[in-house]
Image (tube, rainbow, N blue to C red; front, side, top):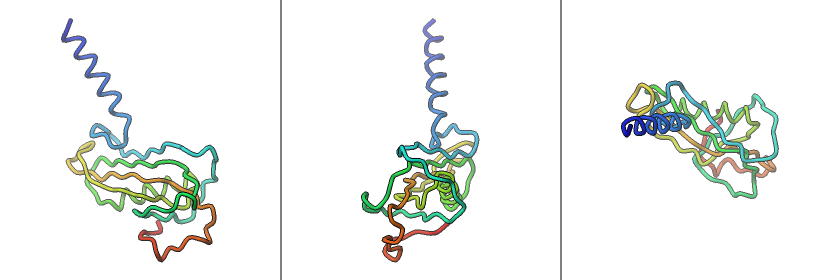
Length: 137
């Protein structure tokens, strides 16, 4: 009886832990976002600015948080491209405060993962990209 309870508890823990892009048990490449903004923005096909930098909170609307998890070895550039694609789907102008790392995941010991904030600028003309570090993807 006790073994059955332990088994069920471990099974529930395993199932619940599979719901995150940064979980080592994912079995497919995962891109998730948690929507924060009540506003919705139109998807677009323009380039998205990807940056590790932060920006003044009054210069943008936060759309949501983007999380990417890959299951196989690769570079962080794969993660950045996935973040840019999700940003376009959300109508974002940029993904900021981007972090990337490698961790065990899926079928590898060091798969690329990342997270960041998808944002929409309040006024694009006031953004000075010369002071920001990042790439247009």
